[in-house]
Length: 68
Image 1 (cartoon, one colour):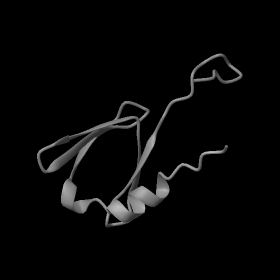
Image 2 (cartoon, one colour; image 1 turned 30 degrees about the horizontal axis):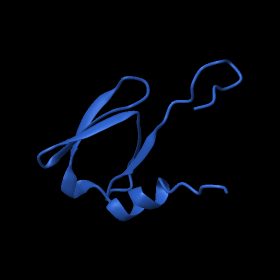
Image 3 (cartoon, rainbow, N blue to C red; image 1 turned 90 degrees about the vertical axis):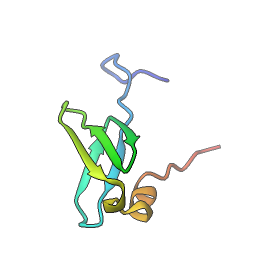
């Protein structure tokens, strides 16, 4: 992974979109049964029910286009 101009590695984040259209930027996440437990880049922790996640929108927001 290439360092940024300030010499630090970039933080990899995941965007989470709920069915309510609320959006979170996550630095860490894990599934714990029917709950998605997460941490935001600022250290804020939270949890949401797996059934409240809009998986289609979450996938669309996290698609990565790879260049050749």
